[in-house]
Image: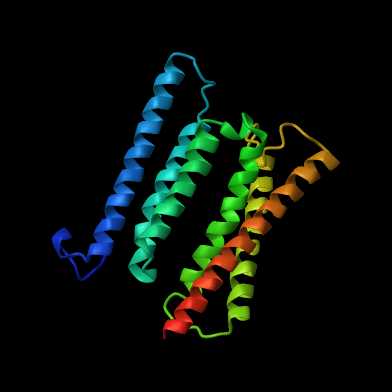
Amino acid sequence: MCYNVDVKKFGELDEKTKQIFWVTVAYAIFGILNIIAYAVVAHFNLVVVRNLAYVFWLAYMAAILLVPIINIKIKFDLWFVIVIDLFFALAVLVGSLWRVYHLFDGYDKLVHTLFGLMMSFLAYYLFFKSGKNKGSLVFVFIVLFSFSMMCGAAWEMFEFTADSIIKDLDAQVTFGLYGRLAIYNTMFDIICDCGGALLGAIVMTTIQKIKNKQQ
């Protein structure tokens, strides 16, 4: 994988890019070990065999490989790459591949909260990390929070659409609930997204405030 069109040798990459590369390799290996373990336990009928499990695994691998590609332009901090890859692992491998969403009721809410947090962090890197976009701290907070909530709403629409198309997917993790109970579940997801978005916006706005004082 090439991280910079002007760099042909891995040894010539800057130190942060090398670290992000090795973090990606580590999470990729973790993903490969998970799919091997799943295939083994599925072979012995210790879990319900689902073809969707392999789709989830491919989605995870695509997500973690996408991060260093985006890093070419945006230049993430190492801590963000570690945290967002960890989120992908918790949400896709642990939650979907191993179906922990269906084993523990609160796990889905935890992931939704982390999703809101991650999207606030991502918004900061997209709009303010470079320093090209100037604005008050209130403006920064509003943009981060709004972007994260928009992503949360988009994800809920994706889950609803996926459940409507793919039988037995249960992306919304409704456990077969219908009517008002199903709506309650979805609204609780959005509230968790909101909580994560609020926390993430506060954290990144505080970081921006510290940077403004240092300039």
